[in-house]
Amino acid sequence: MSDAHPIRPRSAAIRTGLTVLGAVIIVISPIVGAIPGPGGIFVFAAGLALMLQNSAWAKRVFVKLKRRWPQFGYYADLGLRRASALRRFERDRPVDENGKKLSRVSLMLRTIGDFVRGRRV
Image (cartoon, rainbow, N blue to C red; front, side):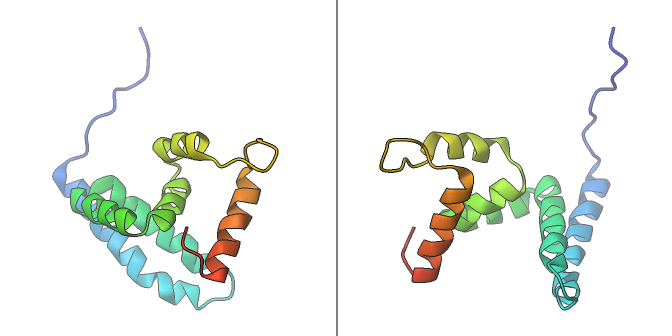
């Protein structure tokens, strides 16, 4: 018999509290972003992760945004370390001229270059 405890679902009050905390963290992220360094990005990502884990409404809005802007939704999924995003990445990874799949770094650089040039991806 295993000593591991089964995962119990969170109560509605805890989920609501964590969702509100995530919203507050997202609201203060521009303030933290004024401090030199990339801190605001990480604070925003933490608030977004809290909201997406605990709110069905936030998940629905996130899915709509991902459908509207799929490339940015893709990077958000990678940032949230979602398994579906990693499977989709491996499946859809483009190949170079030699038929080899592009590495994650070269794909990211290509995507950033396309974005800077204004090309639609």
